[in-house]
Image (cartoon, rainbow, N blue to C red; front, side, top):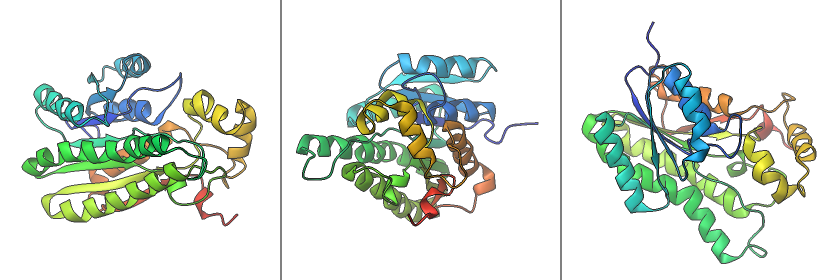
Length: 266
């Protein structure tokens, strides 16, 4: 039995992880490889991808790594060229890179705002800009951009730039999805809720809870109607569905993966 992505080539950015466990990019690399995709794994540094490589190698999946700052156009262009040189095509692009910064417009300095826009939105724009002409020549392709529940609702902390950026990704994906639908290219956004990924301990606890990881986890979990937090594997399964032929009639829309959190009115 062949996998759902057999023979497909997938560029997955943010393919590493800030610690052991299941970040979104790592989980997508593993899950997509399990379904037969050839993985072109992209990250800013090599070390975070070591565990990703090990997990893919455990079952003989095919993966190539590439270092790239996805906020830099020249690096993004070279990254996509390297993927085509290695695998001959690009069938799937997963844009994962991003991260939050605390504060509203008064307390946030301009440099932080600009970095948030580059990190979360410009990175998506540049990767799409480089990949879309290739997919257009092929007459097919799927792009999945990673949003956040912060782009839909208040999530308990002021992170105005991050929220604005993630809301922008949602509509950017809708516009792209409509524009490129006649060319056989689908574009969707996966919207994670408050997931239990290594980033919670590595970064978010210091930003929002004075380093109290357990306290932050309890606070985040209390917002979720299902009563538990998902992790990167849940995001990977959502992205896998959207990239498969099972989702052939789905584009220019979002799949929210949040345990029911954004539906709550409190």
